Image 1 (cartoon, rainbow, N blue to C red):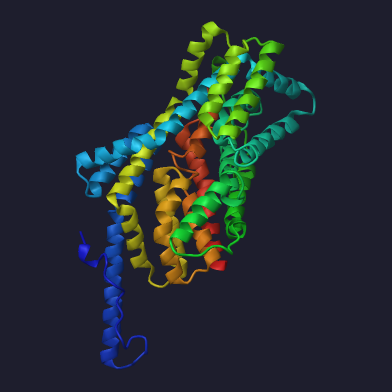
Image 2: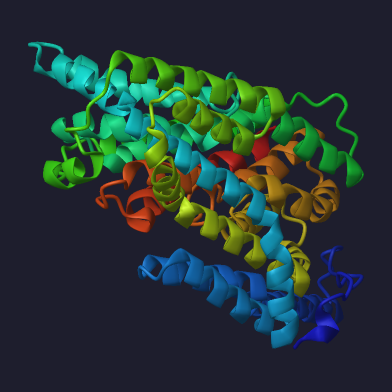
Length: 485
């Protein structure tokens, strides 16, 4: 469809730029304007039927209608592959080839769930909850405890990206014990989801430490340089400080405006899951504390969440915090706790592979170029929107940047953006969609911690709020940064 005008060079007819007043010159100008309009129309038409755009829109639509995210990803991948010109066998083959990309992460999350259940068996989460409940009962400490918990959650989320680069591993360990106290205070869990997502994303997109060193220096600057732009003198923190400010604005709006009102949750449902009657002893608490430290130490040493979680589980069993007769059932129940996240990550890897196989990511960019003309403002906006669409589908900003850098860098250089602005554009285009994607671990992690009692919906309580309060400000502030840097 419309193959003939996909690769046509920009049309220029002499005489229009001179502003000649002859009827011949005017007719040439009108002809050029008409052809330009036709080309933009065809580009818009091609974008409207682009396989990537269609698949992402279908995936989001199905998920918002409460269709299981795994089913949504599979159906959308098949539809996107067929729309992109692949046969059904090629589509399924690409999907199956991509599944292995998420298997390692899925297994790590499953073992992390087993470790979290072992900690629950030790009584450590309930000891913490009992201590917090005691503080709540003390006169005058309620507000301080509430904001202290929220600040602690924010601090831990930020630290998980740099000081203790464990990413979302802390969420199923730290958050469930706090839910009882947060429920007493009627804290809206959507606020907590926004706090967690801010802490999981903003540090790596601004601070070149920990995961930020990987994203900003190795992936972002590395791929931009491969695309033909020297970045030796670019200060990446300066390039990303305005978008990071946009994330902060979104956090403040979520906490102090949108979700500041009390929201009721059932303590009975939470009690059924948490089993508050579970007993604990000083020994079980010491063993659990040692297991947590061992888990973090092994993960930092070997850079393996899988081995870290396995080490923590073994310490819990060997130390007697989990009775040996209960070890197998505890392990199985814990793996089920994180099984949903694992399946979503595996399906998202297959979805991403199908989108790459169609080649429509590159076509989406080329059609966007046809609509830009020479406008820097429109070019920046379209590049950011394309990045948003790609990351929403893939679910990983780390995987999006290598795809879009080879396409965006030459276009941005042609439009006259500075090197700092180009780094900002590509970085923001990659980060856009990490919040607000149903398949992103930055949204799956908060849901895993907040939905242990079934009172927190992944799409409407995590995905939609984080999309509104982070993607929209990031889009605006990223566009402003690209125009002023």
